[in-house]
Length: 345
Image 1 (cartoon, helix red, strand yellow):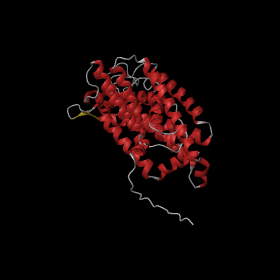
Image 2 (cartoon, one colour):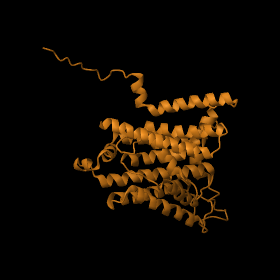
Image 3 (cartoon, one colour):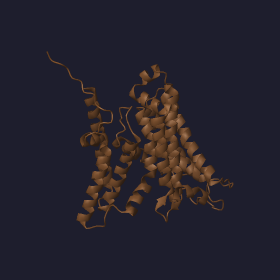
Image 4 (cartoon, helix red, strand yellow):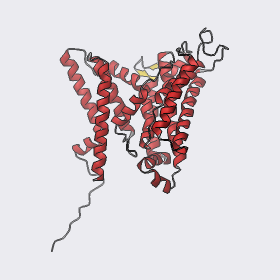
């Protein structure tokens, strides 16, 4: 007669390094990428890659696409997609910028001299993004149009409205009370306002996903929409809110980028939706829905930013960047699908 012995493991048992690396694979990849790039630049005889100036420039350049990644993360977790993000950035930037142009500028959009305080112009940019997000969410939730098709339509319409509004011209001569939100520096230029705002948004996103009912609903909808509905989740209202969040992040990216560069442009945000989706996907936000963490999304943003910067640093043609990005996205999706299949087995 044999006796079955049950061993009760403590919940505080330490994970092995392999288990930790598996749970934080994106950060392991990020660290490995940084090490490889540092070695490569030293071998090539160039300046050391990991300098404060270089890292600071990466952070600044990735704030725009990074905010889009923070927005689309919610959408992808809910098992959706948003292709309109780049166009929303364009539309929000030119409309908010038009309200913030120097009143003495002869080529103003509003010839009557209509101008508002920079903070109001910022709110207008956020509102434009939120409104487009509400439209996307309503189309997905209430008309049952597939998110790909719904946001493909608003992507085309949004860019068209931006071009029509500006007649294809940039919106220049923005007032300082508007540009300060994206161009203010602290600590002697070592700390930038747009980076601080991104960090704040990342903390808010983490809080929403981990500490609120709305966050739990997002995961539930992405995991199984019908099961979430049976459990009492108001799926349609939550979907509208999810896409509104994404649109608002696009509006914020628009005003910060316009502020940093000093002008708004109807071509701003071109292909940013691909960067945002790529960063989220590389960061482990599952296209199958119901899975994803803010920390992984941040890692994905940094991986893309460091990779782009490193290729430029090494003198590699910019054309190769898109090839490398595409390969990384495909690999990330394949690994995600294999992980899902492993869990189902």
